[in-house]
Length: 449
Image (tube, rainbow, N blue to C red; front, side):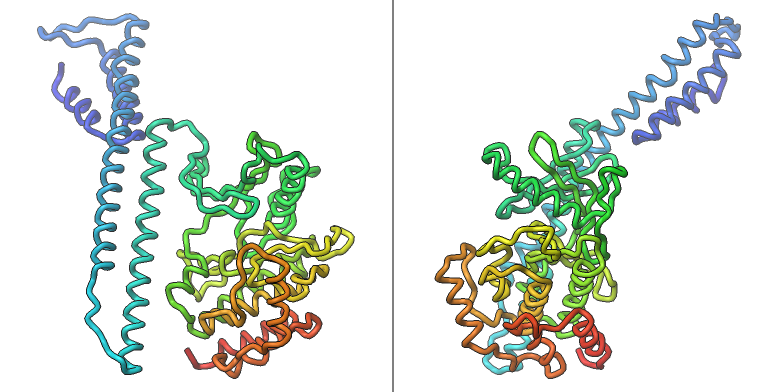
């Protein structure tokens, strides 16, 4: 062969990855095509002309097939290399966490100043450990996706792990191969084993949750244009009839639950607490007043609020409200109130919820007030209730609300009046959204931490 042709093919064969492998095949085909067009060079320098079919066969065999094989092998070795790197990084992060947890406490003291320094050091250590554990989880999720794609690149959804279970639902993390993103999938727990009546009840609740949170129009007959807000997770899709019952696909927020944030930090800085409460307030106002349905969340709690790890307190979409499984329409004609129906986390239920009265948006204002109080003081104003609510516990909580005044001594004077109103046991005395927002905005302008 003439000098140069072999070296071109060899250089092309050294390329890696799927795309470059396929491109290699195309380039090799082109090179081979040129060679066949000009004829095949023999060692003695003579040229043998080839027929059209023979030329075509040589192009295919000598070009695309090796290119595809190279691409496949490059992809396989590339994935194996990525998996090895991920496993190595996970190991390094786990080693670092182990060192942190075994780190001896060098400071010991009884003075207020020393104790404050120790507490700050512990908090920073918790922050670092949490961040590293979150990074390990992300690496493990990526490794899972990588391994599954290596086994079956054609699958649309890859199940990664379970995120949690509630009273009626199971929430899981999946990888959408078409959109190339992580998504949260919510399904009904043990759907196939439920009685038909219970299935229909939960199906209705799932449908209402999806409609409350979604603006995705499927068709003129199947419209889900209801409600979206920067501080509410986005719904991607909802299917009512699948093999496992109704399914909701929604946005995955790579961040930290407010409950986790409070566990790490204890009391939050006042301005941080007000920013978080303010963004939840904005979402609630839109849900209560601006949406087509005008619904009530009924389950506002630190477990249903997440802080986006890709945002900060300076962003107006840092805080996200999740889980609308307990939503109720605020228009009485749209639902039948059942006496003694209790929905939501027990510790954040308003007095009228505990007594079984028809809900209004003021129950969400009460829950937001409790969360703000907890962020500012590090605790709730009442003894915690058990997850399972009994009649005796309900009466005990109602008695505490009625006869034991809330201690506001740890609350800053500027916030105390509005917080007292938010936690008034008389719902008619609780403030509306605009009154609360005005106080929050004024407080955030003050030159304090």
